[in-house]
Image 1 (tube, rainbow, N blue to C red):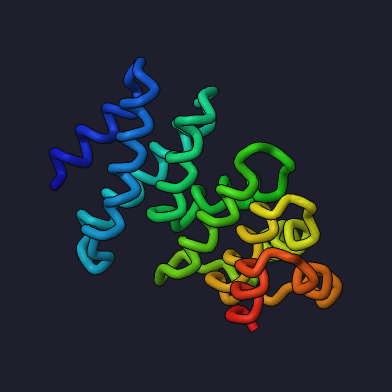
Image 2: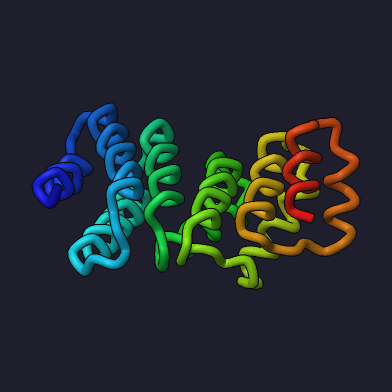
Length: 173
């Protein structure tokens, strides 16, 4: 397992964007294999989180950025979550993806940030977005992070024509 982690981390630096995207996917799958009661596994998670956040910061290709964001949602517990919250707070092309990744992270043991004011502000603002994917991502993050959004944002989001948004909001209640 450690050799695989080392190989995936090294592959994030490939010159081929398809290889970088695949390495990000592989690092995201580590979540299924890591046991947080084992010191070596916690260390591997931290290394993967740091490498993914660093790679995302320097990556220009949107087709590589997306799997990096998704992988962070699966393995992040610290700084990677801050990166996702920052992306969810922008109007950029990764906003919806970051909100979904925050939802995925919230379903995990130590990665829930349901009381984080910055996360709550990003989710509340995203619930009122005119972009269906952003609203759905925000509703999913709200549900999986076990967070509470301000009433005006919820009222606006519940009026969405997107059934998925309403389903996630109902599950969050």
